[in-house]
Each structure stands twice: as structure tokens, then as C-alpha cells.
Amino acid sequence: MGHYNGRVSDANAPVGVFDSGLGGLSVLREIQRLLPAEHVLYYGDSSHCPYGGRPPEYILGRSTAVTDFLVERGAKIIVVACNTATSVCIPELRARFSIPIVAMAPAVKPAAAATRSGKIGVLATPRTVTGESLAALIREHARDTEVYPMPAPGLVELVEAGKLSGPEVEDALRPLLGPLLEKGVDTIVLGCTHYPFLRDAICDLAGPGLAIIDSGEAVARRTRDVLTRQGLLRPGSGQGRLELFTSGTAEHVGQVASRLLGEKVTVAHAAVPPDVSI
Image (cartoon, rainbow, N blue to C red; front, side, top):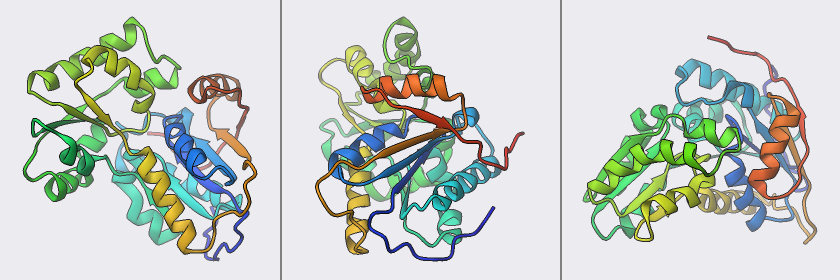
């Protein structure tokens, strides 16, 4: 696996985005909305998804390998569109790769500012819920707010299967939302990039009084700001191209990705070594 020590200076180079699976497409949507001229490379590590229950060394190994894959294809910036990978390995990735790396952060700060009841919930993967990154965000931005982190196993797998509504989704969400609503939570942070695809189902169960906040738009703005500062925004008003890769089965992942994005897309299989297994 090669190190990358050069500096990309070509504004026409693509933005690299990755996630443990297809959740990062929620961030990709926001990047395309804000920066439509940018070319984007997306890698969904679907055959190793979810990262949420994996050991840290496993997550670091996969994240490093996938970042390498994107950098070798010329990415000028990497967006880690995965809260679990962000919470585990951002310092290591930034130490290894010289191009800018934009990370996720659960939207605790805007949620704390928005709540009227002073109580917010955070839906996240088990790894993110127990991680120091979330704890630090709560200490820094929600000191005067009651924060209820809620591990949400199973939701990633539903999105990966393209299941966004129906009884199975409701059965998975109800035991997560019920306790939060009983505590008086009026704002919920979606602390995993897969969860915005379940926003409608969450709204249907929780009712109109609940505010739901995710980080996709903020990450897109951060990406724009970093590219602007480095003179790497792609010029022109034309639509950038999108290339999607997966470690999973291309046909299945392509079908789900098309559903999530609301348009027909093609996904190519690309194995990224080392194929870490526990």
C-alpha cells in the first residue's frame, strides 16, 4: 500500500468520499448540491459494513486502505463520510496522507442551540456512542443540555438493504425513539451517515414536534471551504462526474445506491487490500 506524499494542485481532480457502506451517500448528496461542478469518487466498503461494532484496529486498517485507493486515483481531498471511522482514526489518516481530510462530527452543537426542552438525543452506532469524540463534543457544546446518546444497532443494515420504511424499519426504530421521547427529547442528532435515509420513517413515528439534525450539509460546507482556501475548487458550471465503487456485489449495491440517490447509478466492484478479517 503506497504512501502519498505529494500535493495535488489540479482543481479538476476529484473529491474522494468513503463510508463503511452506502450511508455516506447522504453526505455525497449534500456535496453535489453545494458543489455541482466537482468530480466525485465514492467508495462504499459494503463487504465490511458495518464498522460500528468492529475493533478499532480493524476500522483503521480498512479506512487506511480505502483512503489509499482514493488517493491513488487522484483525489484532491478526502471526505470521511463515516462517523465511526471519524471517531476511531482521523489523527492517523491525517498523519499518513498529506491531502486535506474532512471528517464527520455528530451535530451536537446545532442541536444544543436548537432544543427548546434542553434535552437532545443522539442516535449513533455503538462505537460512536462510546467514543471519546462524542463525549468531547458534548462537553464542549452541550454543557447545559441533557444529552442522551442512544446506540442504534441494526439501522445501518436496514439502509444497506435498501429498507427505508415499513414494519421492519418501524420495529427497529420504535425501541430507540420511545425512551428518548419519554425523557422529553425534542431534538435528535443523526450520528451516523446512514440514518438520514431513515428521516421520513423517524418523523412518521415521532410526530411533527421533533427536530432532526444531521451533519451532511455542514460537511459539504467544510469541504467547499477547504477547497476554496487551497485554490482547488473546480471551475465552471458543468456537472461533475460521479464514480461509485464498492467492495461488495456491484449489482446489488448499485440497486440500493440508485434507490438512495433517487436516480439510476452504476457501481463498480473494487477490492481494496488488505482484506482485514477478524
